[in-house]
Image (cartoon, rainbow, N blue to C red; front, side):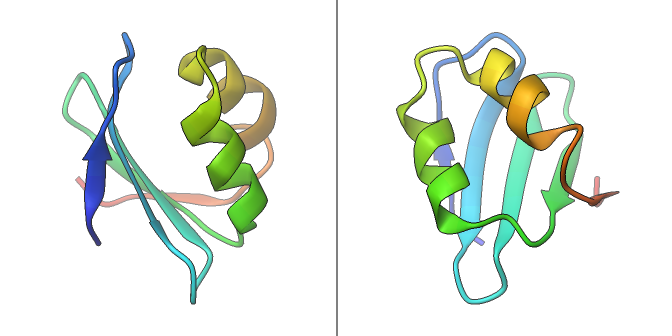
Length: 70
């Protein structure tokens, strides 16, 4: 999955696979997590958000199942 570098304190890169609705986030401490069943609108809002950590904690981290892949 192709990831896009982002300017954020805790998040360094974000990727999205539309056909499987999988969101991939790489965190500054090196871990990479996949979040499943994430609608494309949530990904779009995350990418447009000036406060990505806040958006992640409010809308993604507590809502979507996750697997740490690295």
